[in-house]
Image (cartoon, rainbow, N blue to C red):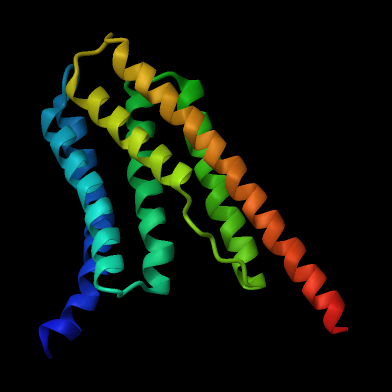
Length: 189
């Protein structure tokens, strides 16, 4: 198999690596106890970088796939969600932030699962990407700073606000898509 044929699997392999990294991240985080979790933070940063690299390579090499369109954002949701749960459970972030992030992500995943059979394709927006990146940054900073620092929480709340705004944007996108399909079906009848 030529490199040209093999490289089409690289973006999805990076996404799968992010899924596989979650248990190692959990272990590194729980190993530390109190204080900065540099190992978990660096591992988390590596996951964030692969998120950018896999998307860039898929676009650059024109090897986008249906699997990647679904698995890439799901890997992000699981990595960030896992970190949020761990940090809430250990008192590093407020419960409200954890609930908002997890509820929004759960709504996106369940909404997509319900709408995909009707032909809806979720198009990741700039706002959605920005929210993910701000959340990755906030979690990363929270992981590597001592407890009690305010500035990483400011970044976290900014990410939460962006995530909510992106969630609304996706809701509008889904509604418009379904309305367009309904009008199209009505004309065909």
